[in-house]
Image (cartoon, rainbow, N blue to C red):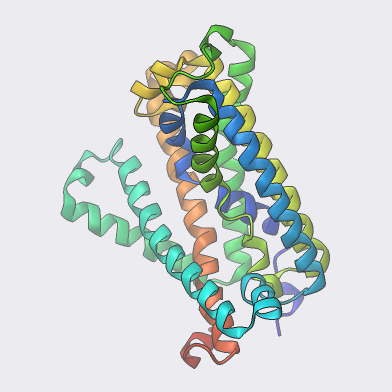
Length: 317
């Protein structure tokens, strides 16, 4: 059992959802989408609507099975234990790989300040060091993870909100035309961009995994899930519109850091370093949230006698 001191509140649960979705990838995704032009905004809208529908499903299930681990419990109740194991096992492995890629992304952004990290040996050491630091935070308990997630989520929103503000203030409508700049049909362009953007909503289920570590889980997990996805949806769509308002598809495609170039309109050459800092913080917060899920999933399987009992071992926190 977890007493109330060892549980996170709504705001941490909410930022767990938002923080796990808004990672380092959002800073680079516009480069891929720019090949299709402003029609990619429709891709964001469609994938966002699908994600909100999925979030509403998780919302209802989290209320029905409050205090239980989401992905495993929900699948087990309706499809059986074996299917639930396969789902959670695959989910867990994907998080292990995702966390490795996040650590590498943090190292890549850090080369802006530490060029020596371009050396593969220093690169590996630094990436491993990042994982150790985040794991140490996790050892402090759910409250420490929640606080770190809350503050990094707030910080990572700054460049996106700044881009939205600048984009709507200095919008160049000519950047939106032609709507489809690719050689694909409009339907295929929308299909491709919907697929690309849907990946950015991975993490909408985050609040349901550590369900038993959330205060008033029946209310807070459901609200965190649906509100977190809706909030992230608006951030994605508005920042995408704003980015096209500031830069043409050609400029975005040629850029190594679209948000830095957009911020450069007002911040000049320093934008590169400023956005790099925000990208590092964003990835750190994302890694922190996914590390929590990486811990919880095997623990939940152990509780159901599907994983070795060593995963049930806890420290004082």
